[in-house]
Length: 294
Image (cartoon, rainbow, N blue to C red):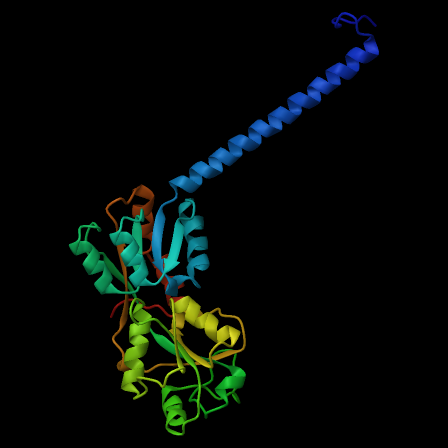
């Protein structure tokens, strides 16, 4: 067989080895180029995804909500920053590059609108409620509740604020966590409920103020406190031996979740804003005990 091309000074065997080496090098470079292109595409997609501010009470339901959003729109998931509404409002006031704000407090949105940070006053997306949470072994310490929660044996005694008040009157110590009322709307609602029940202020060392609603639940899950008042939405899929009972909605001001576009909102943020007002999003919200404004 005649060799059509051969590097001068190389035998046929050496030439074949050299050619194979060059093919391997070319393949390696091709893989690296493809990987780099893919990484750039992912980075570009990440940059294009809107950065949004979300109240921490939405942390538990957010994965479910975004699964439906991606499936229906074909768009990438937005970059969500979770914190208390008060903290997020402060960040927005100081120029944080958010495009959409999902607050647990209507007043914070009104404040931002008055400062020219939002396009308008937004819309009321849903109303939230409170529950008193305890571990199963803690729930039996002070008395019986009224109705077992889903997945909780009927013999488990549920916590109520009336029972906490009875324990306080008997000087039976317990630790209770709530979101910080100074910047967490659910914390303010929890304080109002405690005042209504005659439990405010609690003795020193018995009340723990968490940074936000999600951290409040974490305190209960880890046993840092005996009880916690948290948004109902957080306990729907919470793991752990939790029992809970609703806090009387007449004992606190309704928690209004307000949705608003910020001045820098892009088309993707506008798309998300519209989608969150649709029936698919409403179905997920309702599943997590967030209901439309009556």
